Length: 260
Image (tube, rainbow, N blue to C red):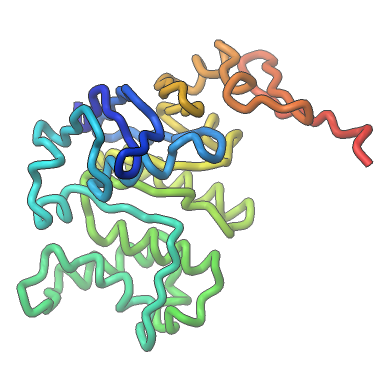
């Protein structure tokens, strides 16, 4: 198992958001992390990235304790894309993506031909060739999201964590990005965790679902078993919609005809 989180408690300071979480991830697998707002998805991602310490329990990546990793080792082991807005004045998209190569450059930050080749490959993979020479401050929210994903891919780590990577993207681009990430997991052996509200897209693309409920831990299983066990209605209770299953396919049924 590439990543293992054993009975971890996550939170901030003395405040625990979730307790006794256990989840595992194999290389070459894409996980979609689902849950309502406030269930702890972002807190879990930040903890798995080492940005927040565990309040209890332990996380290992490739057999090494995350808490004992040096910052240099961690930078070559995992990369994370958050929803935080990054503004760098007078920096082109290509230069911003090149920052992902910092863990591999010498102390003076000089890039090699290999670094530059990786940057160009990533630009092509994410489909942003037309943005490469544009200033990062001139990007739309959707364009900026794709660039930040590209920067994380340029870091070329075996573990990639993304917090709502399809935010601000239209439907075709959401499908394209999620499909790209799944393809990368399967073809490169990367372990990828995506926090998302795209329930339907997650169920159709993820190798595994991590379903979080407020104060109730995490359920890790295949999309099919999540559907078969009718776990979504329990995790997303609402009078305005329900999830229904027909022949293994799940549909979102709205109950809003009487709403004024």
